[in-house]
Structure formats: structure tokens, C-alpha cells
Amino acid sequence: MTISASTRMTAAQIKLLDNMNVASQRAGGLGSRLDYLQYNGVASVPAAVGTLTGHVFQEYTYTCAPILGASTTVHAAIALTASAQTAYAVIKTLDVPRVLNVTGNASGITGNVVYHGLDFGGTAITDTIALSGTSTVAGVKAFASVTSVDLPAQTHSGTDTVALGVSTTIVGFPVVLIAAGNFISAIFNGSTDAGSAAVSATLSQNLWTTAGTFTGLAATGTLVLTFTA
Image (tube, rainbow, N blue to C red; front, top):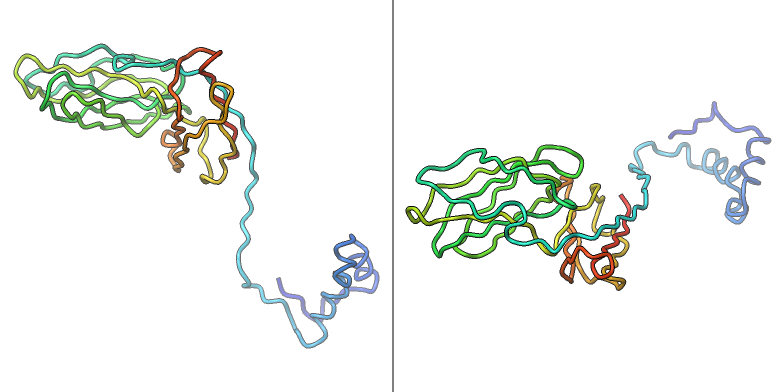
């Protein structure tokens, strides 16, 4: 903003700004100070003094009671075959958006399992999870529903299986968080939850990891997340 001599305020305008509020009066009068800057050695207020960006934040409270979940919540163990299986039909709507996982049945099983489904907002997403023997390996995205999976070829002929499950401690936020500092509080089973938030520009990767384990029971497993976005 630039104030030039041709746009000098009238006495009435200066008085109006001076009397606008208490803070202005304490500062010596906003109108008088602007007039002083303009006509007492400072010709103008430079235009390029920085950029101020404002955000309108909304406070949300998200309440849910996620089920306990298991390594087979999405689908029971599926037999792997000599060739990779693409778009294996798995239709599953989760109780709340959850991070998914995979579990092999034998040491040495390798290969990628790719989940296909929808996020909290109904957008199609995928998550690729590498098998690691009999370990349960979690993904990094919260799915509201699963529509199919891509399965790798077997490592051991005729015996390999992969179970499809959900995390027992991680849920997805219903909106994108602006920053970790916008998280306000978490209550789990009636007490403050010492969990942690993961923030991302991608909706499905805004996650809350609880310090406790989900039960699905309102009496012992209700999670209340309060945040701004």
C-alpha cells in the first residue's frame, strides 16, 4: 500500500481513525500516525513489505470406537500361486478408516501386496506393503473401504498364504490437518491418550496412533480426537 500527497486524509478521516478504538488512542491515534508518516519525512509506506496469509480454522471433534481388529479383518488367508494375482476381489468396508496390514504364513515369504480402495472422502487410493515372512507389516494409509488387492507370486510352491488385516492402534482423520500443532487433544477410554498424530497433505495419511489398543466397545474403547483444520 502506498499513500501519496494527492490522497491525504481529511481532518475528519484522521479523527475517525484516531477514535476508532482504545488501542489506536494509546498508540497516539492511528489516523495521526499515518498522517505523520506521510508528511513528516516518510513519503510512502512501501508496498513490498511482506505477505500476510490468513487461514480460517474450524475446530472438529471426531468420536469413534474402532473394533479390535485382527490379521484377518479384511480377508482370511489367501493362497498365493505360481503367478502374481492382479485385482483379486476383496470387498470390505471398514468400521472406521484404518491402516491395513499383511501377514504371511511362512518364513521367507516376499513380494508386494497392493491394496486398492477408497479413503475417508471417497477418493481412490492404493497402498503397497512388502511381505516379510510371518511378520505383520502395516501400510501407511487409512482406508475407508477395500475393493481389491494385488498379490505376489508364491515364494514356496503350493504352501504360501497371505492374511489381510487392520492395525489395532491406528485410525485416519476425517480431514487434512494443517500442521501437527493444530492437534488439540485425544481422549481414549475416558483418559488422555499419549498417542501421536501424523500430518500430510494427503487425506489418507493423516493418522492417529493410540497408546492403547482398540476394543470396539463404547465403555472401554471410545476415541475422541479434537483438532483444527
